[in-house]
Length: 221
Image 1: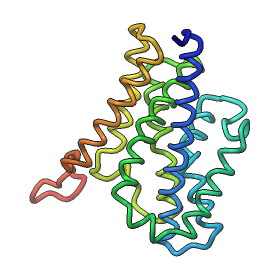
Image 2: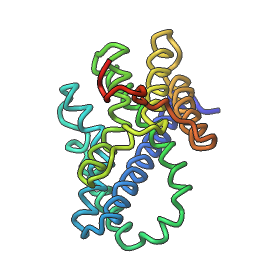
Image 3: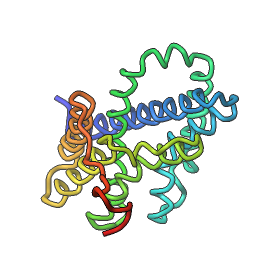
């Protein structure tokens, strides 16, 4: 039977692999935006990289963490560039599997929300800030991608996306606050965020959209 220490090491290795998986999936989504805009290889690399590491970069900057995670480990940048180059060469094949990519993206979203919240708590923030940092980690790379790609940011649409990130981050902060073991809290919180995003994909859930009241100009109370 594995000792507790061996289990923790195994769990951390597993989480590290999932982290890399999330970076790769996010980089792919960024590169696909570049493909729709018919960008060159540099554009693919730029959008893929900012999507893969943008949210974590903003989180570390806001928390004052130095060095920023990809400065400490440049492999994150190299992986994003490599994945973007691969998408440049194989875009039609990847686009044909868009639905599958949405499910992979849901995993990355939930994971980044939780790891972002955990990094904030480790930096000494309170629960509210940790939840916000989790949401930023999971979604702001996509915002930067959409702005650079001249598209409407997905986070501002009716789609349940940022909400799923908030659920995962909030679940983790709450479970840690009540003393749940870190490993159990991570697993439960990632599942919570993933299930919310999955339900939105399956059932087409969306948040209510503002509708102007009849007979009144927009913005008038």
